[in-house]
Each structure stands twice: as structure tokens, then as C-alpha cells.
Image (cartoon, rainbow, N blue to C red):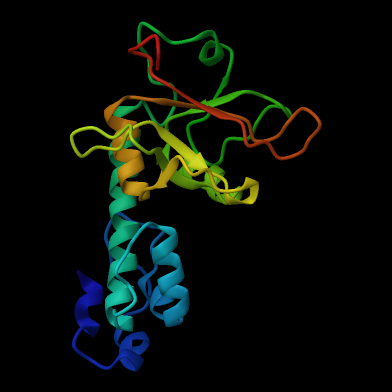
Length: 211
């Protein structure tokens, strides 16, 4: 990986040893030189927010590499998801609900709700992530529903509403892996009909009546 050019050198030299711009092909949203300019605390904070653990003893160069890798893995996952889900829109199946039928399909972060309170549906990773992060939502699974080492029932925990003890935080990578494996649709609202931010969401499977 290009950012490893700084490995083995002093942590203070990372910003100058990374070449400017994006050195990772096919990842237009990742700018290694900007990431290398972040402070150590900022890097650790971003990695924690992305579910990456074990950062306490890492040097800056390693933190930069870890963040770039996490961003690149997400970018790869979004590309795979987009191609398998028809561009991030509705996943079709025999048990698509009326909620999905009447919801506005969202295929990218550029799509806007037609009106406040509009029911929306997507399978796009970036749309879901941005929606959750705007509400300080943490990717989680219902504790005790895991099986064969895989995440169980998927949820978001909203700390501002008080942590739910039955929810266990997991990484975005694990959350989206289960989301894609189960071919789920994400039904949600951006705003309530009165224009206030909405935390409403529901996950549905087009292949199973019980979702």
C-alpha cells in the first residue's frame, strides 16, 4: 500500500513522506496526504468511530495506514454492494412489503427526499452510514442473537437516547457484511412530516416474510 512508504520512520515525518493526493486507485474519496496531516488523537478517534480497535499503542504511521485501509475496504464493499443491489436501490424478492412498494428509492447520497416525512428505501452503504452517523448512531447487533460467529439481528444504537443494554456495538464492516449476506433493504426517513430529524428505520428482507 502506497502509504507504507512512511513505515519505519519517525512518526513526525509521516506527513512529509506521503506523496500528495490520492495514491490508492479507484478510491476518489480517500486522500492519503490529508489523512497524514491529521493529529494522532484525530486518527485514533476516527478509527474508533469505524470500529477499529487496538489503536492505543500504534504510532502515527500505523494509524494512517490503518485508516486508509479501513476507508479503502469500505470503498471496495460499497462497489460490490452497489453492483449486487442494482446501484444501491431496492433489493427485489417474493416478500417485498407495501412499505417498500410505496417508498422513494434512493440509490446514492445525492438523492433527496421528495418531501419531509417521505418514506425512503435503499441498500447503498454510504447512504446508510451517513444517515446513521448524522444521528450519532452506532452499528450494533442484538446481544444473544449471534450465530456461527456472525452478527445477529442488526440495529443502530443512538447514545443520545440512552444506550440500550441489549445492543452490542460491532464494526461497520461486520454490520454491512450481514446486511448484504441477508439481502436486506433499509427503510427510513430523513425528516418527519414536521421537518424535524427522524430516527425511524426498519430492515426488511425481500426473501423472507419475517424479515
